[in-house]
Amino acid sequence: MSIEDFIRRFWYYGALLLIVGIAIWYRSEILSQFMIPTWGNTMYHVGIERVIVQTQFYPRLELSYGGGFPNFYVPGYRLLVASMSIATGIDVMVMSALIVPVLGVFGMLAIYAVAYRLSGDNAFVGLFAAFFFLLSPDITVNTVRPFPELMGLFVLPLALYFLIREEWVLATLMAILMALTHQQSMFALVAIMGLYMVFQFVHAMIWTRKFKKTAMTAIPVVALLLTYAAWQMMTMGSLNILHIAQITYHEAWPVTISTIIQTGLFVLLFMIPGAAFVFLSSPPKRSEQGPEKTENAVGRAEKASYRLNISIDAKLLILAWIIASVVLFKNEMWGVWLSMLTHIDAFNLSTMQSRFYTYFTEIAVVLAAFGMYWLLTLIDFRVLLEKPE
Amino acid sequence: MSYWQEFIVTMRNRKNLTTDVIKVIIVLFIFSAMAYVSYAWRGFNTDHYEIPQSLLPPSIIPIDQGTYIFFPEVVRFSECWMGVQVLPGEMNATNWINENTDPTDKFVDDIPGAELVMGMTTRVSTVGGDWANAPHAVSDMYSNSEIYRGTDPQKAHDLARQMNATYLISPNRNVWAGAYDGPVNGEKFTDPTYFQQVYKNDDVTIYRVLP
Image (cartoon, rainbow over all chains, first blue to last red; front, side):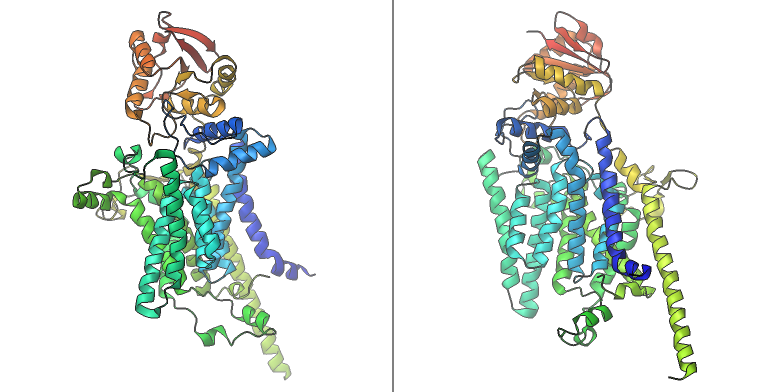
């Protein structure tokens, strides 16, 4: 094989490997410290994991703030770390550190997968999304520390990947997993899926009159809600979460320009043209896609026309992702009005806005990938026309 | 195909090839530059630049004076979150806690220290962890803060006892006690009427809260 052939065949995987390598390298830095990073209550989670390892049960009572009250934090991430610690005999704190590069890279690959799918199986958009994942300080901040959000940022795009693939069983399983992994990520996922379901319903009402997708999308949404409701009832004996401290005391982290900057300079730069490209482009016409592919023509047709195919479903999901995350990270704005309308003080949420912003960053990374693709098509970068082998 | 036609096709392909190679080099440069700026570039003259308040209309996004962007972007923004708030000696002290205290003992500590104790020993502290449904997290944070900030040993002792604490941890660093961020006013813990020193290393002292 000539050098040219070798590069042509393997450059894509080399680039992806390099991106994965950088992600692992940066996240592995925490292994060089005498203990794991402490920001984000990481050692509190280690405490619960240590109790699991010692007793083989998930503790029903808290270790926090004097302890002795119900532990309603969902167990998914903690059980993962504790079970790996039990299986390997490695101390839970060390296991927490070891899991950071693994789950961090899984999160990146989930973004790769969802971008790949949203672009109509275009491997370049996936690759660019993985690259922009590396360049986002906000994503990095939340994937370099061992805490449940690390897993939430992996499960959320994966659940949406299965949703857009119409793999309803796997989407439902991911939704259930999310309900038991990280409450905040769960709110983001249920908001995105719920809004997508509404958009599908409206789309079906106006254009197609086919409601299967709406109905099927409802399954993971309902499964998530029921799972979490069961957990909440089991641990707290109540479905009411409006009295938790984060809402009562408004654990407010408003989204400011500092938060937005942490999306990443290049992510922001490419996100805007990416969004325009996604929503202004129309799916390729049948004639542009070529004739129905026969067995013999598949390879040639794919090579000759490896273009984006952003489906209506993809656009609806991207729109739902953007709007849901904006609604969550600006909860102080609508919370005031909701509180005034209902006369329920607790609805004036004003809580954890900048933490919800991270779910917007995830879709910003995907949009930036589309933006980069658009830029490269502008300069007629013909490498993009050929599907990687 | 005539000689001239062949020649023109060859030249055109060569031109396309050259253009493609140049494009690949430019694209590789763009990607490398973005990665470099994010992970290694430390700015032209300074590694931080103030964002002008006039960049966006305040009605859209207000920009506070003194809002900066730092370079290398990913490293500077993430390194502070990758840090450790406690001292190595506090980690060493958790061995002593495991070996010399009862699992039901309760500790006065600041939030990072308390979470370290939770993580390494599963002992409960007065603050730290998840405050979502803690019955009196806020009052405990104020009491805890007063213990570290105040000068009166009796008051510190009484507050610790009110929270059913049996030990008190005094680290040699600024504490984040819930409602107080600053140095430990540690003189009061040496009063033998209220506290008994049971462990000490370069970074931390542990006292028993006397009955």
